[in-house]
Image 1 (cartoon, rainbow, N blue to C red):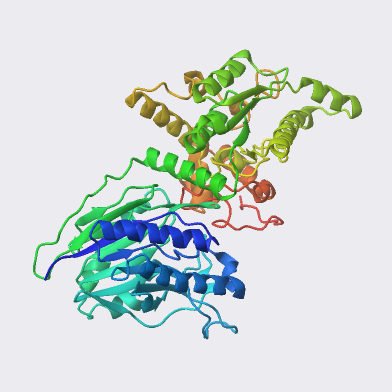
Image 2 (cartoon, rainbow, N blue to C red):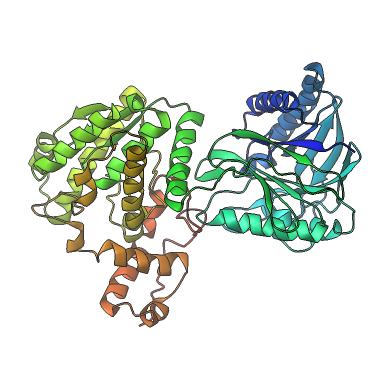
Length: 552
């Protein structure tokens, strides 16, 4: 029996744009057929985009998706692709749900061939943790599906089905499979790639056949899907791997039983710093593109955070689409202004200088403010300028705060916290420096000029809202602060556990107090790309009004 050539179509879909998603499927199907594939597999919820959240509950949305699948089957046939088997994800019709009083749709995979649906499968395990709430919007499937293609028995599963024990994988263990096909919408997290391949290898061993794992790529609101699709053998060998953070079509051949497994190209995985950088940049690019923006505006202070955000934006949409605004006050240092100008020139950005002193002075002429209120006024004037330019010229405003600042409340609400998207929202200050150094070194390796001025990386960080101010006046060193924040936020350790780790009591009490008092600010902060296991937002849901304090 000849090998079965399978195409893995790692594409970037858009939630709700069923016609564009269908067109992308047809284009990838054409390329798959040209590459000699007899089967092409797409990610989870390909027609609808993913995740669809409460759109699943709209009858009009379900009808639109069903119509798109019907039209897609006919269009594939008309395009001369009727012999190709095309496996896609979509939303299924409503069905009785024993765990809820109402009928709910399903998260479905369908196989198309010859202008018709030849097989269907409904996702069994519906995740209800972290960023997922599928248990609330979908009904669970309870049957397994095996598709026969060219004499090969291929089982179907969807994402969470292989993460949970039991369910379809266990039921397919004795199904005499030649391969297990898994459609995925698995968001990126640091370190998740190896976890996926190790898990898939265990499932491959369980069913005694290779696992073909096809994952979504692209940004959707605060989620980033990294692609990184692969094929893994029952012995754990990776037989094929697609690249991370880009659309890609790869092929792999399923050998006859008893024959050694075939291997295809195995793209190397990226370093952790490059992974995070490309994840945040992809999330930013797709948020800009999918929401109809052509340009962004942000404040350029000369500091590391705004520099890194500006470079990400330039990498995402090109330097000409970046409007960088320097808004110096009487406290702004000359080196900061010089660094901002230098950065903009390196990126080819639209650079503007709008001094804020006249505006601040006029404000003080109407109401007297001092101390922190006066400092925050400067940030709020800057935010007003950026939003004014956004409204006037149609740019997306980017907030430049990082996770450490957001955790401790060191961002001015309605000031530097304004914006539509925050690329560093899930990136702490220590990692900001690491990513900046990686990006500059990446440029050097390519024979390019490093985009970030060295002094922006090396100088002590400062908001420059009063004379001689630096961040470490009121915060622990960032290397220490980020350790404590990681333990308290991501690992949910309390005061007792933090002290047991050996952290200074005064530092623990200060950091815990700052974090707990800033929940209201975080709730109002713009969304940004999730890159860690626990990001602020849907991952971490705490009450704003709470009198709980860590016991001493």
